[in-house]
Length: 335
Image (tube, rainbow, N blue to C red):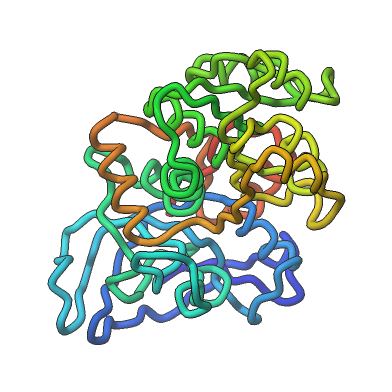
């Protein structure tokens, strides 16, 4: 089978096509013919060598395809089933309370989905949403599951809540779609007027161009009549967290997801505790979270926003588009 391997020390010029042997499924495992993957920031930092992995690692955490073979004892899936991966193969349910649950991330700790065939434990997969293409399903395991857990599991949004989303990457767009489906009021931020307009087409109610409004936390307070946002989906990190603390409502919730602006920095702690607000760290979610998300997608008909799809051999080019930050929504890989 064909697969992309990443040579040490990493870098987009170190992604090389290779022929590798397919692995027969053992007891408890399934083999899928993988049809699609999608790009996440996690995949990018692996590819450029910022997150070191073993030499020859097959990257990409997300995948969707058809079950081709099942090992002994597997009863949940059978050949022909359409499935998608889970970001954490061993996190079945409950809290993220031990390292075992967070182990064996595909494309990082083990080989991932830049490959035509993938063999993993059956617990590393769920069914795809009804009617989804493989590319659509492959956008969900990291980005959508992260947005789902941030809003529905940790913040427990309810109709009428005000949710703030940052930018137009995969997590933020899914958060906007889930929040609107839950009956929330959504404020969207971006540095691009064109992207803000597209976020409006997806249902965002109000917009802030943070290039024009540097202290956008005050703008959120103005928009909400001084109340602030009940939930903030924080993808920026240290560069945006102070404004998120400013923007959050009394007793509100900041779901800390990304570090796009840096991994450390000042936190306005006095304002945070005066507001009795909560910051929760979010690293994707459990298999049970993903199954709940699929049920919600089936009920609401939400469709992912895909900017562009690339062939497997063009993975480096796909990462360059991601690097440019010119995309809107998800970038896919067609295998």
